[in-house]
Length: 143
Image (cartoon, rainbow, N blue to C red; front, side, top):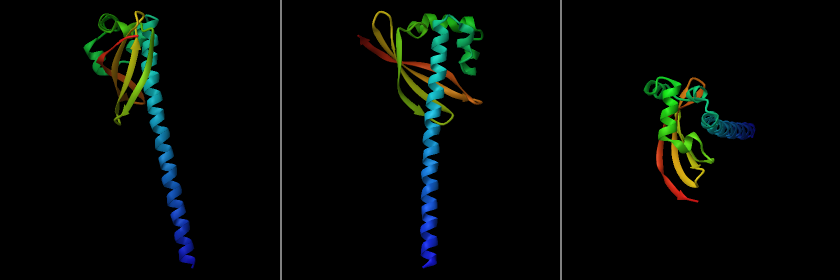
């Protein structure tokens, strides 16, 4: 009878640790998503404030290598992605965690009412998430 009791206690402990592990990893996933969204929001806020030096700090090394100064980077965003430079609003949609990289889809609305969807690709750089690229998905039409 004592071995049955020991077995039951062991099973309860195993289930408890599995549940705890699942809870920890679920929190970790939310933390990654929140950190990624913070990075994107911070860069957009910097663009809105015309602070290209700050916006440039959120760019991954591959982007900084392509655009070797904050001013050149700012011109590229202003001319190539005007809705990201000065959006009326934006909303985070789907998120995909790929380990050391992730994809965050963002829906932007312009001041003239057009909608555009972009996928932000972010890479882990030390303890920070950096924006490694932005892909145009499509124009979602007029509101």
